Amino acid sequence: MAYLEYYHAAWGVYLASAVCLYIVWFIWTKGIKNIDLRQYIRLVPAVLLFTPAFHNGENLAPAFIISLGELFTNGTKEAMQGVVPMLMVLMVGAILLAVSALLKRPSKKNVQQA
Image (tube, rainbow, N blue to C red; front, side, top):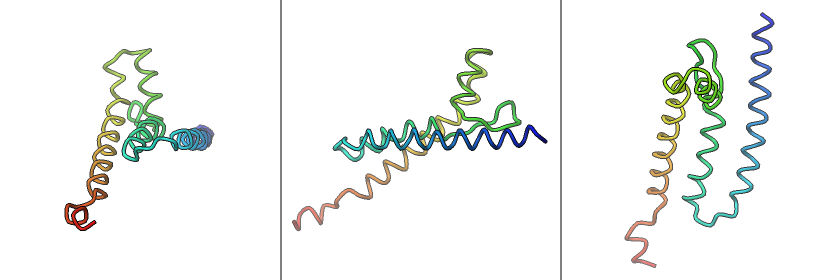
């Protein structure tokens, strides 16, 4: 049972540090004028930092860590364990950002009235 306690503690430390890194990235990208571009640039590190994946079907770990570890030890085929969840989350995030941008776009009626 000691392993489970360390597992949860490690996840807590990882999430706290990932949130701090993302806050720094959020502040650094504040100066980008184009709102849509800024949101897409903020999406990529969010996907990298916060996407979990199952490692060997047992425990969750950050997907990019699984990808890098498996790439260096077992090759590209095994690295897909972490790449596939990241790509899926990136695709869903990009679709949501695109839909959000379309909904915020002013309609032709509002543009003609102004």
